[in-house]
Length: 323
Image (cartoon, rainbow, N blue to C red; front, side, top):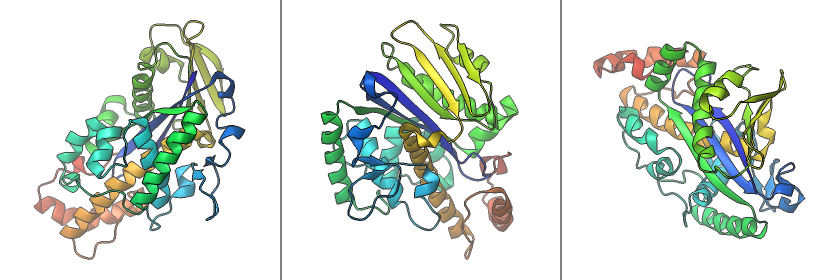
């Protein structure tokens, strides 16, 4: 078996809301590693929107599945059943806290200390049908077992504005912060599979092409070999024969299913956080229009809530990401 890992983020550019980084890991037979998901998964997974008559699970770049104001159903149809499968759960997660316990337990305490995230008990799913998701979970479990394939990990890191700002103060570069957060997640997965070959696919981080020194810092036991560094792809390998590790940083990485699922998972977690964030501030400022947190609109939102923020004695460092 080969472990295939995909890593992606959501919320790299905004000033409000968390930076979410997620990773999905799949155990697949050796002969399928170079084409996963190959012909054996036709009718099960698709990178295009299925017709209404198809039961195929749509897994693609989150930008294709999620549109503001259109709800979270398309993300939930894949993320929630596959989260359950990855964590050995027999049913779909029932709440935001339940999802965080599975995907990003370390985020619960820092998020719970912020008033806009204080109530993590919000019911899930938000927009998809729970019964249909439960059926999807059962069918996926059967189909993956038939193909000797499994999702063996789905995990995430969520950096609040305070976490993000602390990282910027430390590294003075948000691309560096994204790379380090991603590799911490990768290392946590690789540590679980010390005896298996692993191939990791990441999207490029802020246009960066060279990652060898950073990889060597995170994985010091073997010499990290450079197998190409360029605008389209940077590739690295290390480890003994039989349990080699390979990490690829590529543009348009979301075309690979494990990366696409990571993209969807990160986006889902961020959108849950932004829904809670907007709801809190709309209670403080009647008539306030919600924000997605991106710079131009974030400035409008920041000005609108500033008086309420000061009355609540909320430090702006807890709210506004500095880059």
